[in-house]
Amino acid sequence: MFDTMTLTKTVGALCGSLLILLFGSWAAEAIYHGGGGHGDDHEQAYVIDTGEEEAEATEEEAGPDFAELFVNADTGKGERVFNKCKACHSLEEGDNRVGPYLHGVVGRTVDAVDGFAYSGKLEEATEEWTPESLNEFLTKPSAFAPGTIMSFAGLKSIEDRANLIAFLDQTDGDTYQMDVAASDATEEPAAEEEEAAEPATEEAPAEEATEEPMADEPAEEAEAPAATEEAAADEPAEEPAAEEAAAEEPAAEEEAASGFAAMVAAADAADGAKVYRQCKACHVADAEQNRVGPHLVGVVGREVAVVEGFSYSDALTGLGGEWTLDRLNEYLAKPRDFAPGNKMTFSGLRKEEQRASVIAYLQSLAE
Image 1 (cartoon, rainbow, N blue to C red):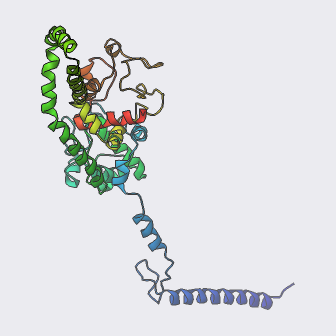
Image 2: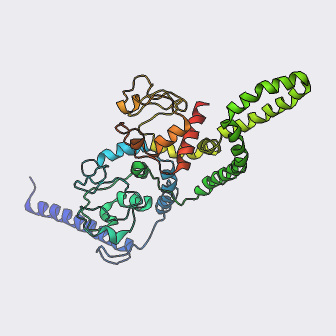
Image 3: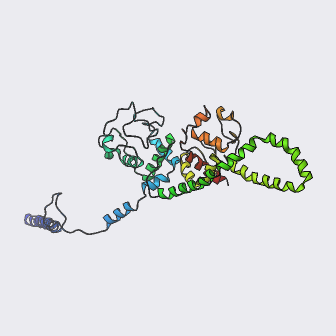
């Protein structure tokens, strides 16, 4: 057994070793931090550059551009993202819930919905719900407008925000035109459309001139016997008549290409593809697949309400006839007025140029 002196020496040695370790640890920390103490406000004496901050900054700069994502957004995916908003918001105009209705929210003035009690914090942050301001708001509402009664935490994915905003943008039928660099490219086809439209306007007087003989066909028939008698007497006279008939055919073609049909012919299908984003959630244009609405493959010239497997409303089945260009133009302008009682919830495309371009796009898919 150990005696008292041996035990005392052993304990003393252990305590001494512990003190040496503690002192060494204190000295090393003091040297590393430059003697600035142990508080949270001290500055690090030696900074090792690992490149992490530059890498993070590079990742942020190389991230997707919201304007580009918005222009090419998928409204079908945006509708699925909207499921997170359904508990508090409605797409029906005037239907306020926990939050204000979102029909036509893109481009709307902030705090503009009648009958909803706003906190007053939103108007301090922005004046209008542009796609950019909505993107910033939906990222983190509490950070965008501190004090807002919006309790939603936000959407982390910029793709989800772009798709959702594009979906909300089509609720009132009037799409928001963003000022992006890509818009310069889209303006050129519009200029080309105007140039292509000029010859049509110059040919209009010739078309008007051809309408008068068309309206007076019986008179031509009455003179036909005399014409044939003269032709029998003088056979060479038939050649000018044939030349006149050949000249009338282009005039008839020009007449058929007038009006809205001429707009469709001059429209850019690429512009129509962008307008078609508003239809994606309910319709398929490149495959015979029905969704909320019937597929649109070959819709131009197709008989009304004939797609197999789709249940049409009585309002459309009773129309009959075909989907001509003029008929589609009238229908897309305001579906509810064209066929009252139909199941189409889309409010319509206000601009005739948009209607012409989207029909041109549908025609291009069928070619």
